[in-house]
Image (tube, rainbow, N blue to C red; front, side, top):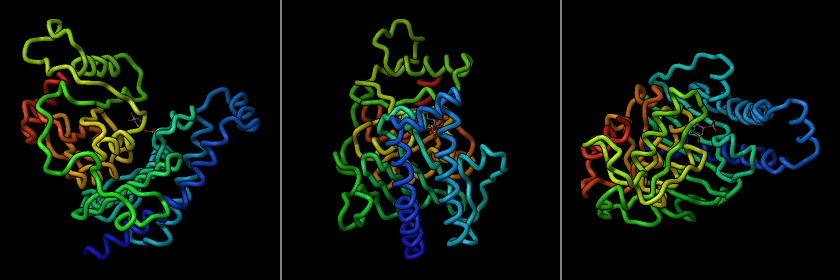
Length: 314
Ligand code: IPD
């Protein structure tokens, strides 16, 4: 029911309120002598970050186990720790404790906890909180998406998304007017990396003559990489970015973002243009595109988006 979903949202916000100060403490401690010593000792940053990730995820998971006894849990660190997490129809909290881990290490402020809830394998509640910028993004299925500060009531004190264009705004006439975000991901093996670079090239290149006929989709107005899937998606939800394109994000990277983008009037599709509404697409690490108001040649339909997608990834 609506009342139930709203109570789950309240709970999700409480989780973000708990996690925020911990993430912020870790973010702000990057110049501390203790942390530098630890970095030198460990020789790389990954282990250190995992400690913060694990700390936040443990805390969130314990709260869910205590207060939502019949709900399931899927978290980035839990899966990394070897636990099998299969998505079922049961209410399931899908959590990335720190999305934008590399940003967290470097002090680049696009870092967020991403908390999504699925019921019957569909994202229905989303909470994304960036404690560095104090931005709380929330949505409940059918009730719109909001941006507020962490201590504000999203609906009464926050602002409804999108911020910069009304829901009914006409789509951009072509990709060449769109600001596009994309990510290269963490897998740098060349067989994974090269096709991504090619796709980015297809999105951005001016030199169409070097592209195969029928594949050029027009160069984008500009390209951005924020380093956090959640933050890229929230840029779309705010109407700042028109398209976010990435190959193979995990379910915890996108679960909360999907419902927030959708409630902000955006579209989330896989590489074949199918709308991501079920668990198969959510957990399959399929190519994922989040689209704001952009449609090729003015066509904002899912079909037009699918056609554009195919051209980009080929
Ligand atoms: C990653 C970030 C990155 C995206 C990856 C994600 P993490 O999440 O969102 O921008 O390209 O697909 O896995 O590792 O920082 O939680």
